[in-house]
Image (cartoon, rainbow, N blue to C red; front, side, top):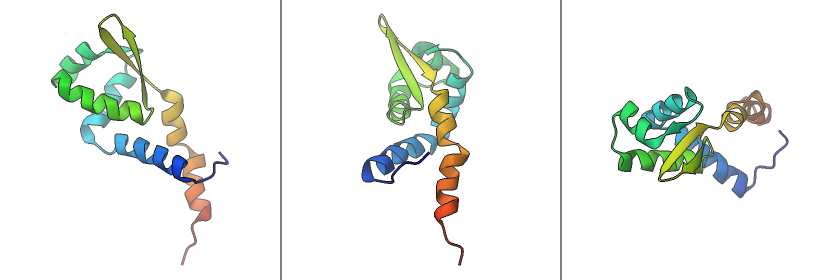
Length: 104
């Protein structure tokens, strides 16, 4: 993962970590991960949250590219973005900081 740390790259990582930095979003992400694809109406019942509030959290997860969305008729279905989450939690990203940080 030879990726330059420019402002665009840092902004993308900021969105991803922001999405993970909330207990409700972690719970939503976990529920989505357990299903191939889950309708927002079912997800709302699973998490016992109004769709308006759920939509706010889903938008942040979408902005971080941790989930994907597919519209079918009037409903939206969400899927876990396994590749993105695995890359985010990868040894390569961790080693980017480990190898470049000096110990005093």
